[in-house]
Image (cartoon, rainbow, N blue to C red; front, top):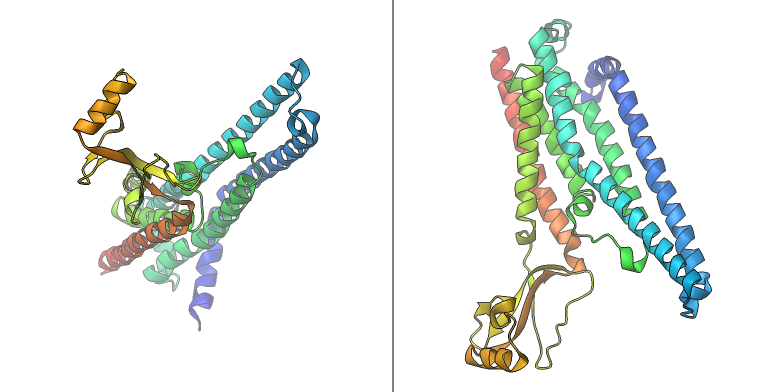
Length: 327
């Protein structure tokens, strides 16, 4: 008998136990998709209409055009805000998932003792836990993948001046594959927490705290996960930094390579005073440490790899805890 066949019965039980929650989550996800797609189509229509108008095409000015430009800018700003909030919701989903797995899915059964019924029905503890994790894993990974894909498509509908930057936390965190990795981490941390903390509410709180800490820590060190590209200004002061780059640090640089703050020679000084200061400090130009747009996928893959390793570790520890509990 295959593993899939042995899991089919317990998996059906999990679905039946939590069908109301799963149905509500599905409806919320569908509503979110409809809202994002609707706003994206609306924004595309506004952009096409504005670019075809005389205000954009010929630079005509006047009260009518001024109001049209104001209205257009307001609409694009609203759409960008919708995308940011939608991305933020998808970004925090792993924490919500972790709480659900830790509390209602695992800890509640251990707290109430209902797990004993399954374990006495020819279902081993390992199969019981595997079924508990298999159902949310399949459904949630599929769900967040679709949500991430729709958000990525919607971001291409924005006007040039109102783009959503790829390195913004709600955008980067809602992009696959990293959002899938955090989803799996939330499931794994939730399972381990539920097995260790047998109180539903306490398990939910601990799971959210642990998952959130991991997400916050990796987010804080995200720029260090891939080597930065450093650009130094030419003699004419030009900095060749690609558009849409993630600028991590910027400042002055001396002939010896020392780095100084940007405002080291500017505190209300005149041009002559600033020039004298630059010469005294032997400052030869500016430097910019940045991630160009091409670093999106290396950063995504490195962070996803770290997250998946942590998720695998949490799952391994969870099964070990379960084995010791049944000995």
